[in-house]
Length: 71
Image (cartoon, rainbow, N blue to C red; front, side, top):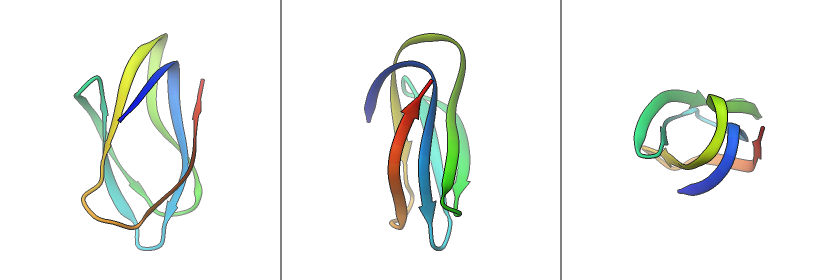
């Protein structure tokens, strides 16, 4: 769980086998994404800046998270 104040949220991440993760903003499901290649993934795309809580649910181990960036 991460508190943030931004419009957009990204993660630089990767996984050897590929991991499907669930993304939630303020406890509301946003989307599922598959993280495999080491690159920048878009987690949240909003129209306005605001204070929110990001939650990422992982069904299995294996995700390598390098950094989060905000815009």
